Amino acid sequence: MEEGGGRLQALFFAAVVRPLLFVFWSLVLWGTFVAAALLWTALTGGPAAAMAAILNRELSPALGGANLGLAVLAVAVWVVVVVLARRGGRDGRRSPRDRA
Image (cartoon, rainbow, N blue to C red; front, top):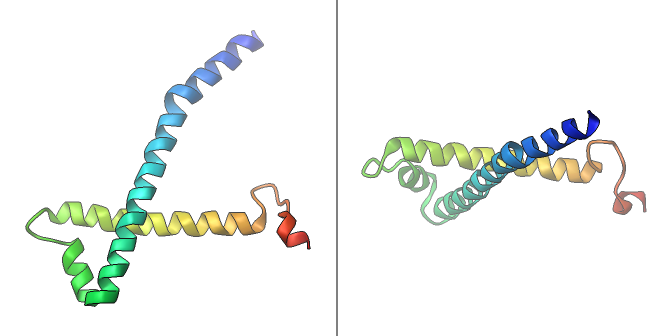
């Protein structure tokens, strides 16, 4: 009975969780590129130029809003990743670099 449940759990992980993680990290990567482009546009043309570029009315304001949301999501995810990496993960273990 235990073996069947483990096989079902492995199938669920392979069929549902892995594709969702792939989609999530793909969106984070896309948001990272959008955030970098926004930062570059803000540095070279100013914040108004960056917002005008992201919320381009000719293409689609909804697409620009989605890209802006993905950029914010990407920054938040990378902040969480860095914080967790500095803390040593979920279980509270310290990284070898912190022990020295």
